[in-house]
Image (cartoon, rainbow, N blue to C red; front, side, top):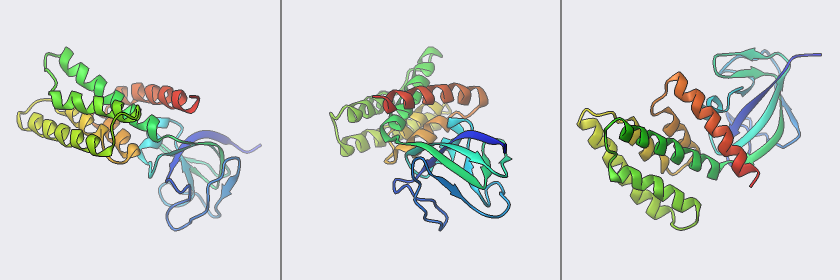
Length: 210
């Protein structure tokens, strides 16, 4: 039996392959390419760790996948000739929730270190929560995001630790997948990413089974 590995893959909202391929990704079906798989160049990709898949996300549709046939592994992703989509999930709200949680945790860590978070950064996290609850719309979220971005710039100009402020600003970006990725990478060191991977898995499962 040939080797298979489970992984994660994000795709755009239209659920089609990128880079000019255009084939529709369908739950339960297997896609195949010919030729020798090459990382970042040719083949069907996925990441074994969910937080790594988020780094490459072109959209909010999360796929649980199985790679097979000619698997080539890299540091944070793998590629093969075949990729079966086991299930799909529109993770927009989950990714927004994750971005807000990462930002909130970072801001609380700043407070614990004796650096009081700017109220604008705290406000944008609450705005994301309010949007997920249907209490505010995109315009209010955008206003909170702009204020949080100003707080991040102020922190940087004051030569302070700006990672928490950057994460808060990112949490309200227009695209949920980009917000989640930027918030996670605002302070991207290995131990943090391991913890964020666990958090992301938990939040995805919460929203997928709601």
